[in-house]
Image 1 (spheres, rainbow, N blue to C red):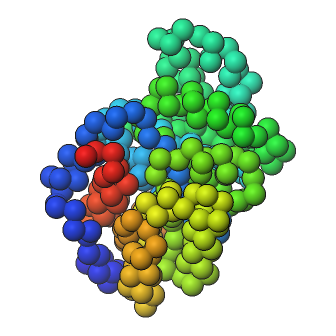
Image 2 (tube, one colour):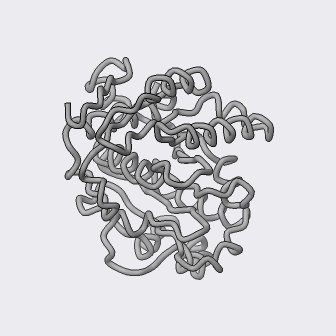
Amino acid sequence: MPGGIEWRPQPTGGPERELAMLRGELHGPKVIAFANPKGGVHKTTATVLAAATIGSVRGRGVIAWDDNELRGTLGLRAGSARHARTIRHLLADLVSIENAPSYEIPELLDAYLRHASDGSYDVLAGEESPRFAQRLDSYTVRRVLDLLTRTHEVICIDTGNNVESPNWQTVLQAADQLVVTTVPREDAAFTADWMIDLLHEVGLGRLADNAVTLLSCPTPGPSALLEDLRAHFATRTRGVAVVPYDPALEPGSSIEYTALQPVTRRAWLTAAALMLEPFSR
């Protein structure tokens, strides 16, 4: 296997069952929050690749939203840059879109979105100016979420790093599924653990218990901590998925799902199915 990583898929029943879960009726729109207060733990990459995987299977209705208050990069790494509009431009016109007839809303919203090259998912880019963060209060974030759930079936959200920010807290409160992203490093795992404890303290223990932990391997060499962390987070969350290192992600540039190695796409199929499993029963 490339890079010496031993990837062992979750025992979910094979690709046929995983595809069935990803294609299944979700019984309403689902919000998936990708969270870990530490930077560099693949939140943005995970948000993009979860949206790409789910969208490639469902073929419709999936969006990745960069809700990072401090210059998130999701808009730069995903979706074609057919325009420079971000959440800031959407908020400027939000009232008129909200009040439009329901049949017009998807087309109106589309003017503010970017799209994957294969059309499998949409992107709502974050704003690069840090001064914009103060506008993402709880009320505004709830309005954006309400709009996105009117037009999309799966909303994947990169939550940023500030657990004290209203946008972070609002997304976690609204989430149907939490994905705890981490890499096999002690500092990253410690912060993920701390966040899980925090969620229990603030009344979101059920969300934490039902979370999926996503362990992303950032280097081609094996990590001595990988199996220990897999076992540890299996006791703290509903399930653990491991995705291997992939050279296509190394440059930190635009993420192209089709450029990933087959073993990586297979791992992401398993991870995405685990995320949607509770809703496809």
